[in-house]
Amino acid sequence: MIDIAVTAGFAIGVAFGVIGLLSGFCLTSSLRDWSAHDGRRIRSYALALAVAIAGTQFLAAADIVDIGKSLYLQPAFSAPLIFAGGLLFGLGMVLANGCASRALVLLGKGNLRSLVVLVILGIAAQMTLKGLLAPSRLAIIQWTQISPASVSAPALLASIGLGDTAARILATLIGSGTLFAFAFSDRQFRRSPAQITAGLAVGLLVIAGWLATGWLGADEFNPIPVTSLTFIAPVADTLQYAMLSTGLTLNFGIAIVVGVLTGSLATSLLKGRFRVEGYASADHMMRSISGAALMGIGGAMAYGCSVGQGLTGLSTLSLSSVIAVAGILTGAAVGLRRRVPAPALVTQ
Image (spheres, rainbow, N blue to C red):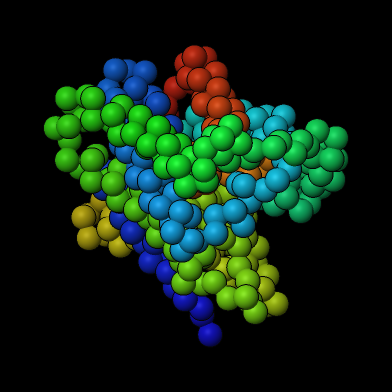
């Protein structure tokens, strides 16, 4: 019997697939546009994060979801590994011209380049999480992990004398308020209802993910990881499930992946936007494969991607997520500064 968290995950994935296809929601494209002086999509991303932070912190303050059980707020972590992983992921998403979530959306509209990206990404992630590269990753964690007194912004504010509730409210107001102000400070964005809607919707989907795993699916006799939208480990798990489903079970992450593909495919067919596309050249393919491998390895090291850490992780106001996102943005900046071109035939 499929449990309620899996069903909810599929529904959330479908919604993300629809939104992603219609709006082009993607951090890589957002950064490219911003470097070309078009900030609408990066402000949509900021709005999504603002909504996600506000909603997630409300769920935590109201004791609806215990986000402290998520991997983003663990008491010990390796800052060097997480930053390095983010760096690799950021560079990889520029090389591949999109992150894992964008590849899923584009695959749903017939982009076979994205199929190659997802397969390579999933294999590389599985190698890093459980395969040949796992011992090295675990050794680095053991050598470099730290246990800071405060692992989140609210905890840090509480440590300097604020009450827990006041600290959470203040951290939420600073984080979410700053992002809202950034998003709506631009006239071009204020006149883009599609991007505003996309930002609000994706932020709400992050909140829905927390509710699905931390409230609807909460079962002390059959506990599941408390999480929300993320794509690196789920893509790897989906590939493994497709090959070795016997003895394995569907989970929230796999349901998200299948849902995104379903939502994107259905929307592309209804809108007449489905068409099969391939690589333009061998160089194009090699760049895409290299980027996918970097994203898989880096995302596994950083415990998430531009959505998993950039939205879900940051919605917890986690210190480790800030480090991961700093690495992702640094890697993306390196890739963009080197003027890695967006392949002409890649649909944005």
